[in-house]
Amino acid sequence: MRDVDVGRLLEDRKLGAFHALTLGLCVLILFVDGLDFSALNVGAPAILRAFGAERSEMGFVFSCGFFGIFAGSLLFGYLGDRYGRKTGAIIGVLAYSIPALLTVFATSMEQLAAFRFLSGLGMGGVVPNVIALLNETAPKKYCVTFVMVAYIGYSMGNASIAQVAAWFIPTYGWSIVFLVAGVAGLALSVATYFLLPESIPYLTVTKPDAPQLRALVARAAPEQRIGADTRFVLHRPASEMRFALKLLFNDYRKFATPLLWLAFFCESMTYMTLAAWFSVLLEQAGLVPTQAALAFSYAYVGAMVAIMGLARLVDAFGPKAAVLSAAPAMMALTYLGTPGLSASVVTMVGIIAMACSSATHQALNGIVGGFYPTIIRSNGVGYASGMGRVAAIIGPGVAGYLLSANLPLQDVLTIIAGPYLVVSVICLALDRLQRKIAARVSAETAALIAPEGQPG
Image 1 (tube, rainbow, N blue to C red):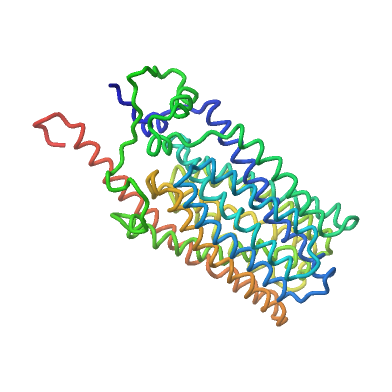
Image 2 (image 1 turned 120 degrees about the vertical axis):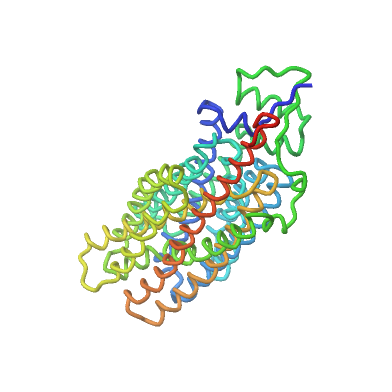
């Protein structure tokens, strides 16, 4: 019997067609996720006018959507570890697409809130499965880059739906953005069912004798000789065969998990609140509705550039590189509220704030999977992102009440930006912890391969 360690096989591979297919489909999944997520954000000003609603009511709708995302990130993290990354992702796409189509028929803010909760389940659900799948497919030196490149798709979705809002809401009304997102999601669910590969490490752990696993390994490593005597294995601690919450706090994870949870919570207090209210904030800063929608779109084009630049830095230098985006985001957000800024300055500063915030958010998504082994990775990512969703439930609602109270815009934006100070400190701490873990793993590996009788 010849054993093949799929972990080492995948970690050491050069990039190829198998990687391109998986990454490309994950980009599309997050692209449509971005369409759906920002449909409400860019439609918010028109919805407020159409329903004659207060900003505090819209804050409640945002919070319902984020509560759904929180619940979805936990539920679908379990589904991904129990039934597979592919299954979790496909169900997630359907779960955010069908309610998006139903939103077109909403006639009250209460109905809108209910549909956003249901869409949120799917939006939150695809995230842990996509991150886990990418972490388990990418070569080791590209793990963070794969996740962050996939999130360029998310930014593309945000930017695209803002263009739809700018050009079509004046003619067709606010519902057009939800119609576009829903139709795109249904088409994508069909494509992923037929084309998306399952995670090879996941199948190795759960179905080591499945013909599907042998076929996927042959596609991922065509030069590998796979005979009847070939057995696929994934070396991991025996205690990590089945998920239990305590595994998130075993060993070094007793430090990593609380730090990641706090980082996601604080980061989402800023990013999710900003993303939800961005169009409204831009209008309050002096832009007209079409200008605000276009600035929203340009901001997410800027986010793609920022994410690409930061991705390789995080892979090369670790979590501390995220400070390079968090700090400018905080400064730009604070400056955006300065009274008397021209429309061009508001647009430029808004683009910087959103682009850097988005890059910081995706950096955390890229970092988190590396702290968890395969068998608990979806749950590890799901719980961490779930902590971010808790903040997202709170932040937009609080911002809605602050805006309704007519506080100065700069005060509101300073409050929104504040949590990034905590995020910067935590990223430095995670970087130090990651280096300690890497040093320990290297020492253990050296001890294992040292010749017998020779000190390791």
